[in-house]
Image (cartoon, rainbow, N blue to C red):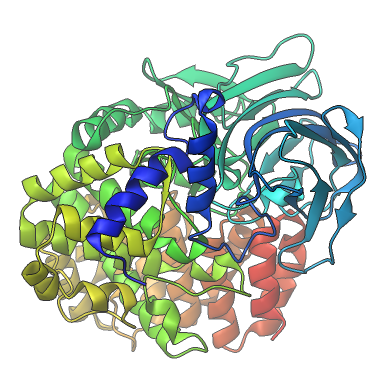
Length: 623
């Protein structure tokens, strides 16, 4: 429902208090507390059992011990609460946690566990009163906790992936992006390992194996993060650095050298970086995503380490989340585009500032290519409404909304506004938007009201057709056009290829990785294994070190029946857990009648995948 601008102004006044706009929450008076609670009633999060309108967390103290032998974390979570006048209970989201012991203001308390929902887990309900200050939950995690991946080895590794609703599998929490809180933690690990969190972090191991953490800025539960491993730290700038295992630290340090420059350019665009430090940790290859924007400590896949700094747009993306997503957060997962569409736009602006317009336009063209393809696939499926920016995910996994629609349709909507209104005007709007809503949540309807109150006239909104962009299925007719002379030449060359072409004339060694990916994806469908054989003989693409190019090559090889690459595809799928790569490759095997081969590879690879990837691959390969 679209609210009036006058109501928006009133709501904004309330939300300044509701969403922890400062970290001085302990000093807020009773009136402000009630305003915050009243505001929360406006948006229902269907992916959380919690009832923050009655009682909500304002601070978490977490004490934990990590046991690699049992793959269990034994922990105590102590919550400082803010309660409504009629509060009678506090509700936490939990999933597969055990051995509960509850105290309320220091006294042992009864509790109730709700029915187990396969998607949402259980509601942990604890009786309280309006005067209750603190609740403590002692518990243990399951060895199969969905957020956690335990990587075996002489020096084992543990990492979490809490987004979207997996934080509840390792910490009792109000697992909604609309609930923000500060936290501190003490974590005990093996003495030969280092523990890190999405907080103020150590840079070297100590003699005790006990590490303390502090996050003074309020964050939602999906940004809680933990990594434990034999990692080292290298500073890049005064505010930036990288963690990685010893045999990868030098390569990672080299690869991310431009990270400090990215941070400087980001601040020039949209204001001060408020999280103090920006570090990256390179995780094991089983990490299911390219990156995760955990505050102060981005989690990154090793698949972006190419040796030539060519894949660092991912770092720009995760850095951009420090504003869009971490600073201003989607209030529910139905508004996911407010996190990701803004972030892709910001990412492209950072890449343009650091590497130039031609470079960022090649990235934008690849994004548009992927968006068009995924849009067509979703429209032909069971949920064509998932091509709308504003999603409806009640009763479904939030992962269903993590598509190119949120990321790239969102990006092109913002890019369209920039092009129509002028960059200077749009930049001022975005900078003011991030400043005005710092440490707050945002939903689509309130964003539209803010947009109309602070940027667009009714005539401009009609010309842009914002209703079609946000609530319409598919891609609007006024999609921005991308001008890339280099990609135009690549397209023409790819279209000219025949079985008789002399591939040695292709300027492969002169191309950026984007050009290589584009060329492979645009080859005529008629070209099959004989042509792929010639390409491989000329450029040894099967052994290329750039994983984006390798992925495109392997996918094209499967569809074009180039069986000489299948052994490389096998090794790639077993060694890499990034879902962006896994899903299309397994799907290509399946669609070309090689489902038995896909299942054979998956049987070997599955034990090394994170639960996020396993859920998707199980669904793909068992049907």
